[in-house]
Length: 219
Image 1 (cartoon, rainbow, N blue to C red):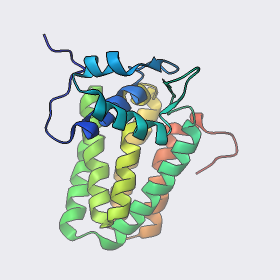
Image 2: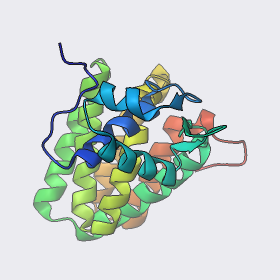
Image 3: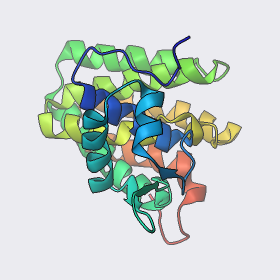
Image 4: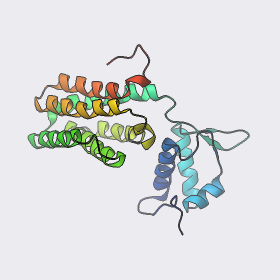
């Protein structure tokens, strides 16, 4: 029987190995502080050592892995600087919503409103469905901003903020605030008010993760 770690080739092997390991590091499937060994890891993933080495080098360059003693690499907790990630995500979402309010087509605004309304009914949904609806809503705003640079940055943040590990840490009240925040962002974009949209997008992130921020960090 194939391991659930093994990847199915469809794109470049090194890209798939990178994504698989990155997601497992963020989720905690690979224990933080664990030392990685190439041979057993390659066997577990069902790949050769060449794409694995490429993926490990990229993960080390991006801070997911660190040099281990006396040699090799160990797993770093990418959420150890969660406060910084939250502040950067709030800034990114604010700029994205601001541009969406300026640049979105009427059809794009209708999509954002529909997805916001759909998500507002998702308080009782399971984690997987809530994550999917959240993806769709934020993706629609990113598309409406018509900025390839912002799209790339949003993709880089997605792995952190859609991880089961982080979503499960949200309390019931934080989840409720996040759900309400979507409609506020959508309505500000509908009104073509870029500054209100930016404010609501930032507040959306800060409200959901406020208890992870220092006392001096306010929306």
